[in-house]
Length: 412
Image (cartoon, rainbow, N blue to C red; front, side):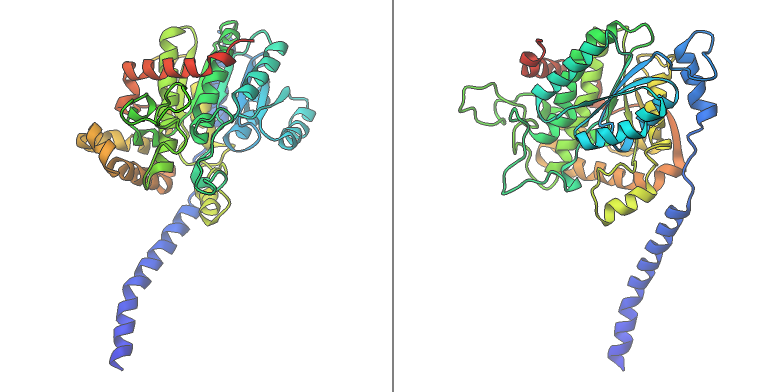
């Protein structure tokens, strides 16, 4: 009898915890998602973008040309639908010919203006070919939205047989797809953006996870970088296959790629003041990047919808022509400022980042809390990114390395 009482009493706390988790999930699943406010917020910005007098009431973006990567699912697909509905010509880049054809059948056959282009972002030669294809059809573009990306933890790009996945050019796959391929695409499209008669813009789909990297792994460090046995230029640690080690290596690779997007945008803003360079954090969005598992299942139901509020910050950044160059980082929720406000300055110290996983764990925790909280503090506005993302020396060092790395693919 005593053993029965002991067993019952020991299981009681677990019952309380389980009940709390079930109740919390119920609240999250039942709570309504924030409204995109299409008529009140987005269409007025589109009309303002199109003409000085406020634009037409029908298709305010008629004549505007928008290039979107990762256009066949998630955020990219949501943006394709919204931009075409406003009359824009969308050039949709995707990996799968089957998905691109399905997109054409779904949107192009409705009378909306859609051009599909296949590209393998893990191969810079394919990026070069795709950009040439677009340049042969268009003399100008008005917006480039660098959206496509991967995360190793999604389960789609796990390391196999102990080997790190790489691009066709031998760059770490996550860094190559998320950042370097888009660096090349952006550089190749700069002349077309300069030819725009509207308000040209480049939008980087970044992430709050960029707070998890300090930038030291984005530049060449002769003391820490990979050995060079082939007389090749040394790679930054994040770009080298298997360069990042430790428990948070996959997360740190993703964080670095998202920080690199911010740094690139700001380096370009100084070079091209007449083009708007904006970065955004969409927060948690049901895109499929989390993979097809239990986590992905719940994420798809708790996160922002990819065709509604989940793309609002991208739409605002692209269309709000009154946002100055200092307003260059937007997000969908107040909670994305938590690392800036709550993380002690000590944890930004270089030695903490190099020798401990403390910063990784803290940012991971903030990001984890963002998922259940984001819909309750949803608001799109310009915000502050990480302190390192404003470092002009780091911006220039990354830009110069990236430019030299893709230089051979910049020629016709």
